[in-house]
Amino acid sequence: MLTGAVMAQPATTESKAQHDQRMRWWREARFGMFIHWGLYAVPAGEYNGKRSDRIGEWIMEWANIPRADYEKFTNDFNPVKFDAKEWVRIARDAGMKYIVITSKHHDGFALYDSKVSNYDIVDATPYHRDPIKELAAEAKKQGLVFCFYYSILDWHYPAAYVDAPGKDPTAGNRTTKLRPGGKEEYLKYMKAQLRELVTQYDPGVLWFDGEWQDWWTEEDGKALYAYVRSLKPGIIINNRVGRGREGMKGLSKTDQTYAGDFGTPEQQIPPSGLPGVDWESCMTMNTTWGFKFYDDKWKSPEVIIRNLIDIASKGGNYLLNVGPTKEGLIPAPSVERLAAVGAWMKINGDSIYATTASPFSNQLSFGRATSKGDRIYLHVFDWPADGKLTVPSFGKEIKRAYLLIKPKSPLKFQHLDPAGGFTIELPAQAPDPIASVVVLETK
Ligand code: H79
Image (cartoon, rainbow, N blue to C red; front, side, top):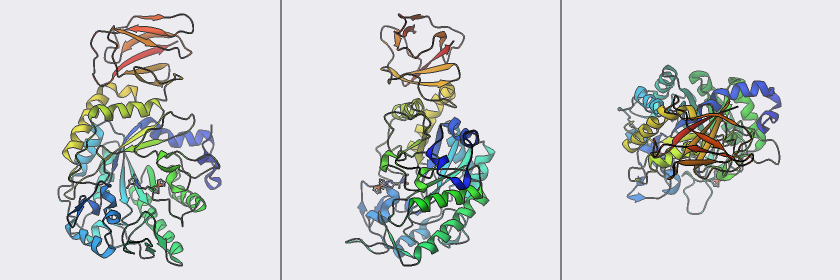
């Protein structure tokens, strides 16, 4: 089945086989690291004594900070503790296969050395180095795919201004306006930055955001999609390049064909997958993307691991965020949680990587399932007290059943009457209290 994205792009027409080939590494990866890092790490959620429940990277919006004042954060952005090798190690050890980092968020600040702007980490901060260059090289070295986030909304671009009650015209805002002629100028600027990003750092994905502006049309999205693909035909682009995404639910609307290769649910997991539709849920581990020093509402490792499984069981990817500090450190609570996910993935990764959605028509009462070839992986969240796991039928017969950690010890199973599924005899103790994996080999 062709996705809308393929059909929407006459300039980059590709066959289904070519499309599958382009999407292949991404579909197999299933798990990536999102990194929100920029000037907002300096105030870290507090401005003039004011704190907020809102997300840290939006401080220029919720604290109504004029451009000229926000720019001053550059003086204090000196991430001398940044260690590209360590960041990539943390992602790799968590079992993540790709990294998506903010090349430019809504605040307009470039985290790489842009030649078309002085508002970047090399030109405007005491650090004077390009961390992206090191990170891209290190990711490649350690076998992860390096990718970029890029915001279409830009609170710093000279032609952009805010027209909202009580708002400074140069502060951040959910929406901006562009001065007459400003759009053409800004489009040129975006394309110049995207050319730099794609040609100099060879990203696997371009992850757009901030597309909900009145001045941004689906036509603009299709043209930008084609432009980025023309720079690197094999690149993958999310659906926020155009106007297709349905709010925070993130999947693309179906009333027409929209630009973009995958849907982007934000802070949520769709109730079910959709055959032939690629998507990725992005989520935070606490309640902010950009670092806030007082946000301690951390999700437990159990919630994070089960989210990863839930997403895989619905055929999606999990893009899990970290928000490093202005010193260049990934916060310790994030590192601890990623290590816990990594410990689980090291043992159970086969049940996640390169899998497709659950073959069962309904969500399993005891947990989740994924498929790969002739195998079904059952993720047991609730271990049965009587040692008998009741599994509904899924249209195939079972040849063998075993725990993923004990492939040489077959588990006894019984087929119930023809349509009635089967039961599997499990040991008394769950191997893993968060999720234990039972493998079914089918005939
Ligand atoms: O980068 C992170 C956030 O800063 C950014 N996206 C993630 C990945 C973001 N999160 N929330 N928002 C931006 C707020 C935007 C919310 C809305 Fe809308 C914009 C609500 C209404 C307009 C877009 C369009 C989302 C729903 C409809």
